Length: 288
Image 1 (cartoon, rainbow, N blue to C red):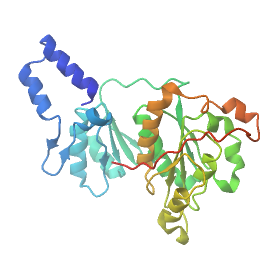
Image 2: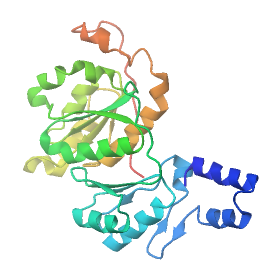
Image 3: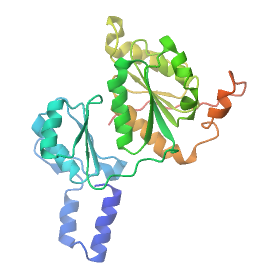
Image 4: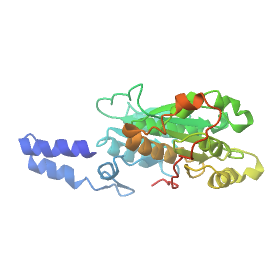
């Protein structure tokens, strides 16, 4: 249940369309629902604007199905991350309208009337990946942010080994409201992007790489030590957290974009800038 549903419930009681006892029964399950193996947080959407998201790894399939079902009864959009095809099949058996984003490994369940898509000219999140091997993490960010209501554009396989591939899409890069940059190996791409744009950059290290990448630790340390300001770093392979964080920024700032952010036309005509550094510094974010 989100804030809008709560308002509808109270309005129903006020108008007499909903019995007081029925409303009390609904509200009694609002803080959380005890399933024995899980306490489902139905109040989270009211507190944060986002429903609880189910992390599937390590959970029994039948538990995932039950949690997703309970959440879907009270929320218009429910996500289950790190889901295998077998988990999706079990969820879909209970909820036939469930969808599976195989690259992102996310199960998405929408209930009720679908929300209208963002306007074509709405402020957008740009998700960039350094390489094709980074796509599962990048797509996790894309699916998450879109499910939460943001417009999302993508630039894939634009890493520093061929930086011309990124610079060739300068207008898309400069016009973005928030930029998620996903990279493994040396993890250098977020720092490069952060030095080119005024928009906040959300960096996601991946575990892609050979032995000395240490499962993404090398990329993580590179990103944390970036010289570029305005770069927030997520956990290794955590595209979900990047999608949530980017959407939060996009939703809060989309309606009041500054002149600094709207730089696509001016920067594309200049090879260098002589004015003061106007980039903003963000603190690191983490997943709940």
